[in-house]
Amino acid sequence: MEPKGRMMMARNAKQELVNFVVRRALDPVMKAKPDGRPEAERRRLEHVQDATRSEIERYRGYGSAQEVVVNFRRDLNSRAAEKVHADLKALHLPTINDIEDEFDAKVEDLGVQVSS
Image 1 (spheres, helix red, strand yellow):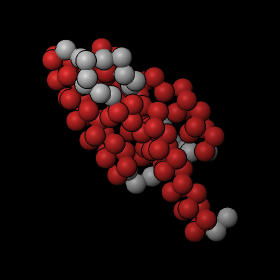
Image 2 (cartoon, one colour):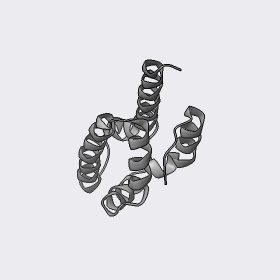
Image 3 (cartoon, helix red, strand yellow):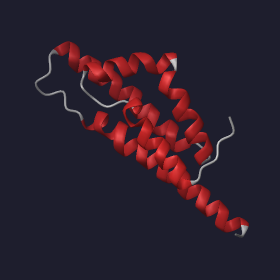
Image 4 (cartoon, rainbow, N blue to C red):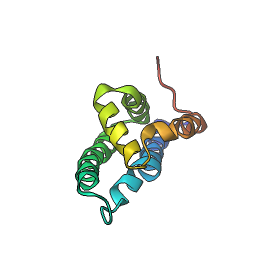
């Protein structure tokens, strides 16, 4: 395959992975409504939505599919993510941990290679 075609496939793989993470784990957080929640939960929701907004921008800014994969895996267990994940679980919202197996299958389907 010519280099231009490979670049297009790589760009598409990156976009597919970012779209997958956003659609399956991050959009539900952004669409959650504070209505009917106690004040403490409203504040917690506002906090996780701010963190999620930043996370969406971070994922969109990655330069390659490999970068998306490496950072997704890092985010699964990072200290910074642990508190946000705990808050998301308390609010009954998804975390990226919930989509890990599906993400890994998508990475494999797309043929994204990441060196260990």
